[in-house]
Amino acid sequence: MEVDMDADDLTMSDATTLASLVRSRQVSPVEVVEAHLARIAAVNPRLNAIVTLPAEQALVAARAAEIAVMAGAELGPLHGVPFTVKDSLDTADVPTQRGSHLFAGRVPQTDATSVARFKRAGAILLAKTNPPEFAFWTETDNLLTGRTNNPWDLGRTPGGSSGGESAAIAAGMSPVGIGSDVAISVRGPSAHTGIVAIKPTHGRIPLTGHWPQVPRRFWHIGPMARSVRDVALAYGIMAGPDGVDGYATHSQGFDLGISADVGRQIRIGWLTEHGFGPVAPEVATTVEAAARRLQELGCAVEPVRIPTLEASDGVAISGALFGAEVKPEFRRVTESWHGPLFRTSEAVLCRSDVTSAEYVQAHQAVERLRDAFVEYFERYDVLLCPVTPVPATPHGLAELVIGGRTVPARHIVSATVPFNLTGLPAMTLRFGTSAEGLPVGVQLVSRWFAESTILRLAAQLESVSEFRDVRPSL
Image 1 (cartoon, rainbow, N blue to C red):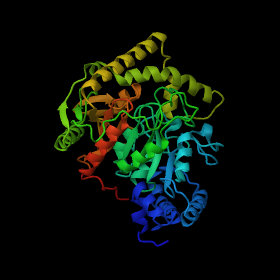
Image 2 (image 1 turned 180 degrees about the horizontal axis):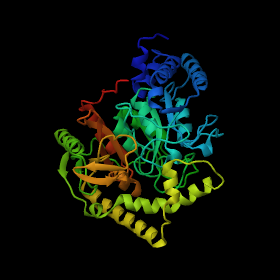
Image 3 (image 1 turned 90 degrees about the vertical axis):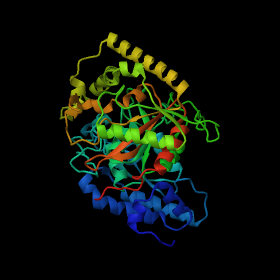
Image 4 (image 1 turned 180 degrees about the vertical axis):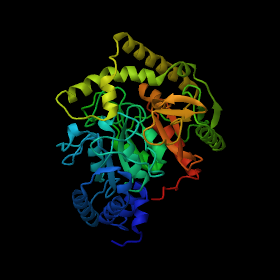
């Protein structure tokens, strides 16, 4: 195979490009994997995003992938492309430690469904990425594998709980990966590090092989990458029922999105603070800029209000619903453990029990939110809004100060958790930068099972974004 790209070119190419180069025999899968291993060696000591690196297994798979290319075998859409996986998803014969001493050295025998589907598409498992303990916090830090830093500023968080995944992809250690999201966890980290991610409709991608599964009604698996086309490709590979997850029931091809030849404008409503609480001015400005560009691209765009969203406290609702299920599960797995837990896991265990009345009220609040979004999507095709109320914050903040208002750190999920509670598809991509040079993302939300609509719009925004090829310097 003829090499016409250097290692830096390979590690900053997206997965679609790499697959094309491999298929056309311009580069070898071995060269691609070796370039990413070299990149990991160079930058991971400063980021701590990669926590398990089965390098020899990856090279063995790369050599087998090269043989298949040279033999003219039928190749999958990601043949020879390395990928990474959040360490809350099982990987056969590779440790899955869930960010906790309780699971240190745990080696699953089977792959999570999403991992298995990546492999069947020809992708090569490169590494596992850092989560917070039990994948249940908005920062990526734990007592087993430590803290992950943001590649744009090592003193800031890449978010959580898929923070290791987002940092690895943003830094060029991986072109594409698999994360999970219960309140913010693929979209927030992606916004903090300037990459792309989608949380599809609940159940689109089976949760099989992910831990924890509680609260299962709100967990989502989602792809993360540096381009919209990679996220779309990965989503198509992972979506569809697996015969195990009872929420994954719709066929892979089922989609209610607006087609390119629909014959009318796509209708977009946008909002910033209304419904989400305080939002930093540079975040609001970025959302407004995206709204203007979408209007210039031919969409019908206007500011909106959603009264039920404004009357709801998604953070409090999720606290009641999640706490009722998560605390008993954490208690179960820790009952025979006598060592330390990370502070977030301890905080969950120390919380007061949720009463049955609080649990029922929270469920009813979710039902009202769902009804409100049904009404909204009768009038609009897409909601454009912030991902996080602020850009990436310094590590370990207990409070956020936004526009002179002090709010708890958990406010970071205020613009993302409503779409976990309702199961709506939502995605993020970078469309701005802060005064401190940090990425600022926007969030696109569509009706249930209309992923193609937001993927199409995201691709249009990406095509006019000045940040499309901007990378952190490490």
